[in-house]
Amino acid sequence: MLLNIDEIAKLSGVSRTTVSRYLNGGYVGQEKKEKIKQVIEKTGYRPSSYAQTLRTNRTRQVGVILPKINSDSISEMVEGISSVLTKAGYFMLLANTANDENAELSYLDLFSRNKVDGIILIGTILTPAHKKAFEALSVPIVVAAQQAENTSCVYYDDYGAAKAVTELLLQKSKCPAYIGVREDDKAAGLERKRGFRAALSENGLIYRESYCTTASFNMQSGYERAEELFNHHKEIDALFCATDRIAAGAMLYLKQSGRRIPEDVKVAGVGDGKLCLLTTPTLTSAHLYYYECGSKSAEILLRHLSGDKIVQQIRLGFTVEKRQSTE
Image 1 (tube, rainbow, N blue to C red):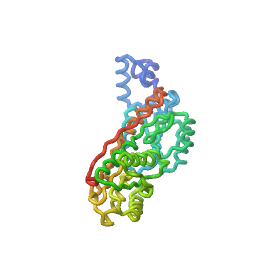
Image 2 (spheres, rainbow, N blue to C red):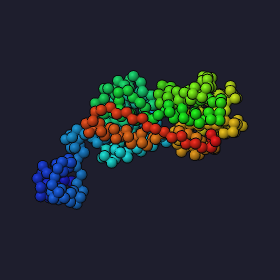
Image 3 (cartoon, rainbow, N blue to C red):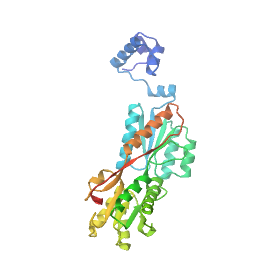
Image 4 (cartoon, rainbow, N blue to C red):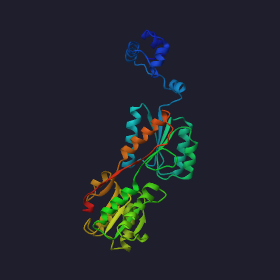
């Protein structure tokens, strides 16, 4: 039924001002509140979102910028974001950049100009251009999965996770190798490599660049980089991979080359996604709390939307899930 506030007021037997206060969350006495509620439920009245936007300068929409959609970790983060925003009455507008840094910048500008209430960026590579774009935004922003300077963010202990997994490998191995990702990705690239190197140093092993290589975020690349490493260094007895997908590709190469896992080569990754239980043998991995990263990012954004302007930065912990690939 199409009604306006005046008609709701007439049917409820209250003033137009009282109905307006009710719709905007203001104080209304219990008796009048019940009358208005009954009329709204009976008529199916819904306030105009356009009118609400004009009145409150809020759209109840949050822009969420994703680096890719075919990822378990991203899906979990989005689920965490959605759980908090939906409960608070907000809608998500999703933008997939396909790992294009320029597309991220374009979406930041687009969302800001089209008046979303806030933005959550699931970050991969943060450049000086990103920092400049953050400073120019007219709405609050929270970065998820990367630490961002002078910007609210929720990120992982990538250094600690990589160090702990490498230390597990070194309990029974003395010739480890590493397959990482590009280091301008501070979290998955730089910090995980730093953790690997720190574990070697603390265990009295020398870091050798020839035992390290860089892959893309997929199984095929993991397979190819593992093949290159073992063609040059047949003595490798442990392999730490920056992601589970890279590790799964490396495991496929090892099996096809006749190497046994874990008897000949122990393998571990980071992420602890569903893939870890599907590999043969099952894959040891550092569990990162993706859902919590999303939900906490959304909680911080809501606090900013309520007027809290203090920059908040949260580093999440990890757990090492030991499985057959390192036993």
